[in-house]
Length: 279
Length: 355
Image (cartoon, rainbow over all chains, first blue to last red; front, side, top):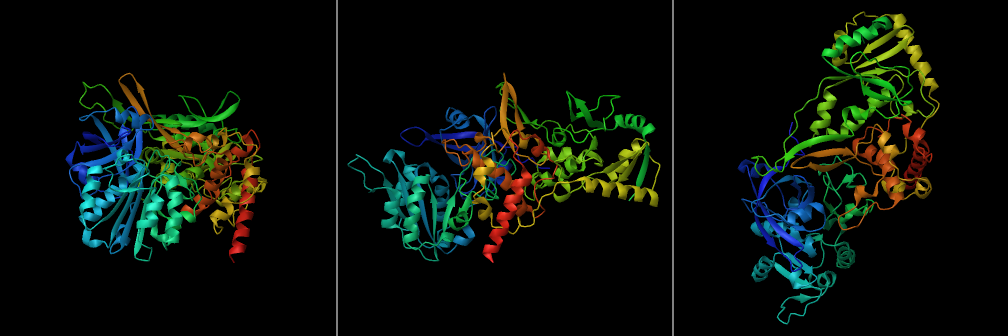
């Protein structure tokens, strides 16, 4: 019997400090046993448990895309015991990854559709995975629009990649910050809901929005999309809840009868409207 | 079905014979209360109990258990790698488990033996355990098993059902595992005759008639989840609750758990321990946000899980066997039978509204 609690051993291959507050770091992991990489067969939108012996595990969205080979990547906010310890670890250190876990963005449904990615703050991780995935299969999708905001320019994740995507003509980028005193800032200034209202295409049955961000951003973006004609089943969200097992057994992350870890984390707004608000 | 006649004079010697193949667990009196404990050599189960204070769930699913071992010593090649403990599950027999506690394992198994993931710790223990049940002739005043999918003589979840008949046990052999255990004990005298069958049937009926307390669950499955969730009675239900977690601790069908690493010096264990939806920490986010931060949300979660979410998820009834422990031992007298009635009635209204 496979032990679903046993992580794959990995080595930290690379660490990048992403943001000016130094609270977000991106870790690239390489599997110690090369055959484990094939077993870790994931889709953009899934998550994994990062496991540190002696500290515990944390559920983190996978920031790399399955089209990127040779490593898996996670961007981690420093919050609690495990994430703080991880931030203090070094390249070459040994730890574990357990997964992939949960469902993913509905890539089969999204084939041939226009996709609007709306992200705020450090919730951009699985959205990065999604953008890389879509760009690698660019002919499978219609228009791709991205609205991504952070408090300041220095708080944006993956800044080099954002700049590269800005230069492409097959993805419509709208980067924004709440405010900045940088006179050379050449992108938008304003909150994500406002920029979404100005830049996102109108909703129709062929257009889907994927929205990840802090609760306050989601709260004010949702009415904008409603007004813009997006159907609740075309608005896709990814939830977070406290987790332990990640496989639907330990009982804490449920929202009604659904476990965020196994039946989610991805739900449509239509589904969420029929569920208790326990997230 | 085969019935074996065990003369009580042969009971202790028979049990002793099984000791070299089985680890024996049975009910014993401990500090004024009955509980299930390993029977050290020569110790015999005390079969004179109504029900144990704690359920039997800890036999399969210990309150704390090691999932993995690890070393943090950089000089060791396997440092920071998790290794599985050896599966030391000895073939175990539980003597005198009540039919309700055995039925609970069937309900809990749906969680740990899912189509996509299987919990090797729970399943290994379950598969290596023989359940020799004891029919309930004197059910407790808070027992309601007959309307919770079971009964005092319910044998589906057992390997053997013992019926206490004067100076003998009539043992109904339910499974091969049960038959093997009885053979090991040397109990082979078959008693498959009409008179014995009639004796058991009569006793069964009498026991069922002694269950005075019932619940109604007929509307739960068809009800709108949100109609019950948003019902007005939850504040009243939760008012007196002190979130002590006694109900989840005692409950044979509560399975929620926590995982924590415990390090001593350079080595340690990743442990799994029982947890409880009654505790705020159970759902507390790293950000400080808590989706079930209020007491009423936690109390509602416990009952919604048992009587609605589980019902919808598995379509196999409620997550409760009617053992009555939580009713009996709740310090503020919250009664799942009353809550079930409220929920079932709310469900009825929601079905009526939908039509």
